[in-house]
Image (cartoon, rainbow, N blue to C red; front, side):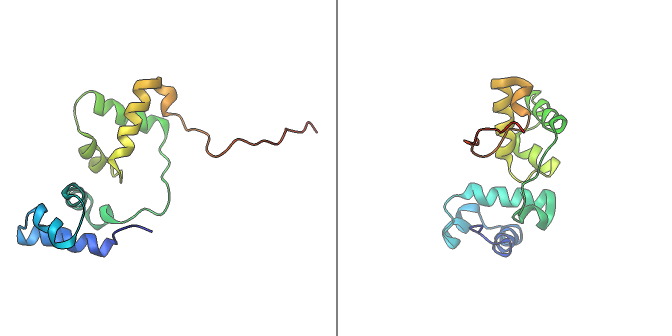
Length: 127
């Protein structure tokens, strides 16, 4: 379960936008651990509306070409992680960070889908 509901996020974002309260005032008022969280919510709300604040219930699979395009946009210095995430409707900028790091370490191979889960211990039968 998500730590903060969509309604709570919308309430805080609207309070920030309508009352011109500072991030720090909202952090203190609602006992949120860090003002960067509110800053991300406001940025997501401005670029995507309420959809940007909703918790995604399924993992999105991105094709290799899309990942490569995003990494190239970042590496050419055109956009930051946050602005890329907002522009391309990616819910978490940390995903782009991981893609860039994987690309720097392994090249295009780092962007290809990886096998998930524990490898099987059962020997493969030859039938």
